[in-house]
Amino acid sequence: MILEVAQFRLKPGSGPGFEAGVTKAVDLFRRAKGFRGLRLLKTIEDPDAYQLHVVWETLENHTVHFRESEDFREWRRLVGGFFAEPPKAVHCMETVAASPKPWSDHT
Image (cartoon, rainbow, N blue to C red):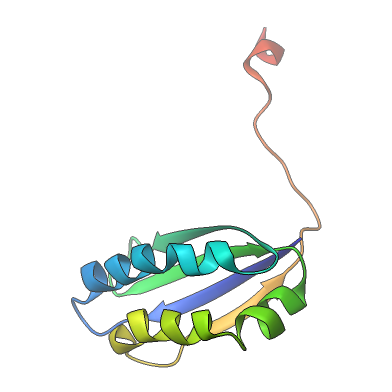
């Protein structure tokens, strides 16, 4: 699995419109080959900064299959007008993971 982390700097005050655009675009992602889920995060310290985390089966599912699709062009049409600057994205793979102990282990 690959995690795409996209960072967005928005025009001041355009967060609600951007969030609505991302919500409308969810089905575009759902149709994409290798798509496994997404999460939009708003930065607490800066209301005009967001991150989009998208899980893909492979890097090519994002960089080739989705990026070269009509659905990607529609995604950009829905949200691109809110960008103050071009988005920045990196692709990550998990190397270490942890989670809290199950409740039963705390006794």
